[in-house]
Amino acid sequence: MNETSRASASDTVFCRARFNYVARNGIGGAMDPTVATILDGRRATLPGWEICGFQLMHHATALSSWNDDAEIERVHYPEISAFARSLTGCDHALVSGHIKRDPEQAAKHPDLGPIEFVHSDFAESYGQRMRDFYRDGSDEAMRAMARSGISADVVAKARRIAIVQFWRNIGPAKMDRPIAFCDARCVSAAELRTLPVHNYAGDGFFFETLAVAAPRDASAHRWYAFPEMQPDEVVVFRTFDSDRVASGEAYWTPHSAFSDPSVAPGKPSRRSIELRATCLFA
Image (cartoon, rainbow, N blue to C red):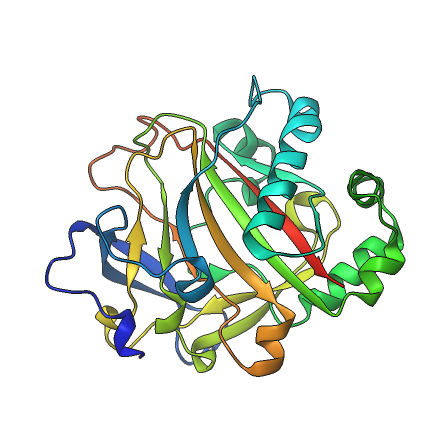
């Protein structure tokens, strides 16, 4: 582990909780639940999303309702695209969809509930998966490219593709299954397991995700949560970067929902929204 990723004696503990890692031997998809300490990210000294993989940031929105998906696309997608461009310096940032996680969405499909295993969303293959997605020209892809004024040829020819994600609490400040993020510097490539995801949430989409094997010492992985997130706050986190793939640097940011021991299940339930920007560098 990189020594700079270790917590200091002054770090504030948020809680202890169980994380569902995959077993180190990786046989049969077995899980290895591991209890770990979660630190209060608001009180920690963290280096920013480009180094540790995630960062709490202020980001207000002009959106009037999180219940109107059409308004989210019309108003919030361009906001996130502009935010991603300002953060990364990319030439174009394509936003083609969003995921809300709440009891109503989970009732429609279990993939839309809080994800309670340690993972980073995308494996090395995701860069090509995005080139194919925009080449194949679904309605969502076409609308995203139209908003940015580009064609699939621009995606195909991009010298670098990075995926930056944005997680926002849109419900009560304290919830039953919030999200925690693991300092990317703590997790080595040897601890990652590539898993296929077929027909995600019933939409026919296929990709490969990264599960994380349980550490031999739970304290080797540094976990952080941001208590009581407000509507004008967002966690920015990186889940793919073709340059980092090529150089062997960490492009992953492990994360997982967890059960807050101070909140009974469903009292209240988590309500969140996440968007991802496909950042293109010409």
